[in-house]
Structures are given as structure tokens and as C-alpha cells.
Length: 147
Image: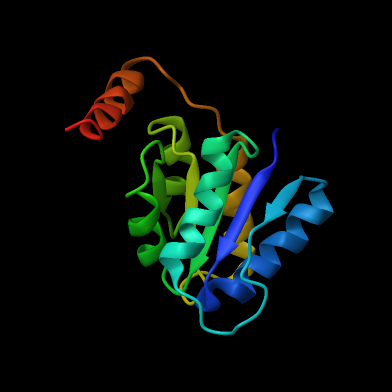
């Protein structure tokens, strides 16, 4: 597994820190793009920091955090080449990888607790893309970026 980019706004900071500790326990390498405290910061800029690490190839995937996970996922999905999913359950976290080849998982610090978040991250990081009929659909998503 390659490095993972982490980025958050103030609403996602505490959850990012819990996930960061979990990654440390598992020996998973990451690049922490901030924020580094609960001071207010705008999520679109934080989304770009994490997604840029994926697009450059420095990181394989990114984990982004804001208060709900929704805002930062909306910002991330505006970036060409990013397929971000805001998830609140393990099934979605697993199948966004298996069927959608998502490269960014977005979580809400005010929505999910650390235990569930770490379970979702584990599934997201360790579930391979199934390809097959799903590849056609992912290719169609990529084609939308060109229109």
C-alpha cells in the first residue's frame, strides 16, 4: 500500500487525529496536509492539498475530513481525476472502492465516531477495485470531466 494523504478543516480535525493515530498503529504511511488544530480553515483549500498528493502520485489515496464530510467531498470532486466519496457506513466505504474505484474517502467529524471511521478507512484502503463491468462506469465518470 502506498502513502495516504490526510487533510481536514477545523470540523474534521479531531477525527483526522483519531484516524492518524490508527494509521500509526497499523504502520501505514501517510502525509498529513493539515489542518493541525481546530482554528477555522476553509475546506476547499484543504481538499485541494490532499487531492494534489494523489494526483502527483506521492500518495495512493486520500482521507479528507470536515464537519459532515459533504463539503470537502464536493470540493474534492471538482478536481479532475478525483473520485471522492462521502461515507457514513462500512458497506459504502467498501463498495465505493470495489465498484467506483474511489481514490478519496471523505468523513464527517460531527457525523461518525472514531471506531466506525477507522473501520471504514480499513475497508477503503484494503478493498481492491473489481474492474469488469464497473470499469466501464468509472470510464464514463472520467469522460464527464471532458464535457
